[in-house]
Structures are given as C-alpha cells and as structure tokens.
Amino acid sequence: MEGVGLLDGDIVIVERNAPTKPGDIVVAVVDGELTVKTLRLSRTGDFYLEPANPAYEVIRPKGTLEIVGVVIGSFRKMRR
Image 1 (cartoon, helix red, strand yellow):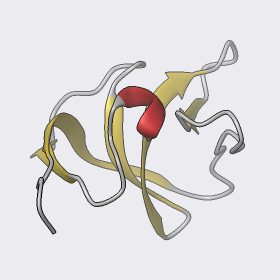
Image 2: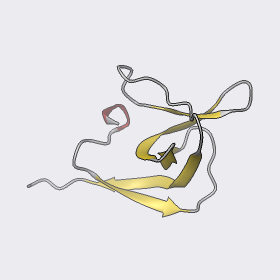
Image 3: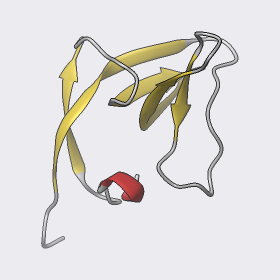
C-alpha cells in the first residue's frame, strides 16, 4: 500500500467494527485471506478491494468478504 503511504513493516492502527464507506482503507478477510486494501463500490452495487499499487489486480470476492476494521493510522519504526 505504498501508494497511500503504508510501507512494508509499518504497523497499522485499526478501528474494529467501525462503519465503513467506499474509499476507506480497510483490513479485510477475502475468501479466507487477510489483506489491507481500499474498499470500493461498483456501479452494480458490489463491493471490491482496490490495491494502491497499479501492478496488482482488483480483488473481487469469489465467496466471502469480511471487513475486520478501518485503518485510522499507522506507525513506522525508524530503526529495525
């Protein structure tokens, strides 16, 4: 999610069970896989997940989409 300022190793701060809306960055479980992506709504009313990196494809759930929470911040350690 470098395109939205989240880098590998960052710690995200997540508000669980928060109301979501298209455009929110969310932690989601899609078909059993955990991911952090931007929540979008298609013209047909289906939710899907959009990666910040255009090299990756949009994720359209084949089965289940569970929103765990909304990313409300992040923390980056300067020394590893």
